[in-house]
Image 1 (cartoon, rainbow, N blue to C red):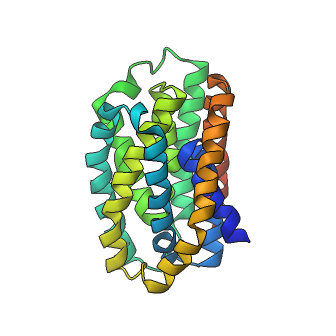
Image 2 (image 1 turned 180 degrees about the vertical axis):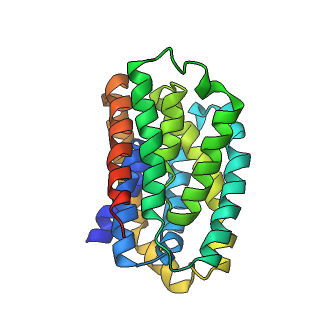
Length: 239
């Protein structure tokens, strides 16, 4: 039951509210302790990404995908190396601290919008956020809040937000497969487990698509920021 609810959360996060990704990160980390949970969840994330691309493919802003994807790939390689070198280490607090810092900076920008007005649109900012997303997605499938904060910082409208995020994560998650397989995180049993939960992911996709048009842009931005803060605080408490 917990896995089914988390699978619905994957669908909703892929088609509407990326901050809800905290739900499946925490649930599957409990069901499959340690880094192995990242490989168990990965095929389900790809299924959600495919659905989100089909629903929002026309809304992607490719300039932001192209700016963040190369450094994200570097981050995936770094995360893969860390998992191989430190397989028993819990990375939740490190990722949580990073997300918390980014969320607080974005919150500060809402109070002082002119102070860092140009920073989010620089190549350096995009590269830094892409690299962070790559590392966090490889270590814990926890890049949703990171990319959410990046797209929020560049003031992307709701539909473009979801479409851009969908393409970014479809590409990055597919490229993560050989790294997770090499680490032994993906196998026949995990794929069978994934297949059982696909209907729940599809249900979440359509639920998210139904919700998004009904949320005002300002509320959407607030929810993205709020979910990121909650995710950061929860990850910080992981021991």
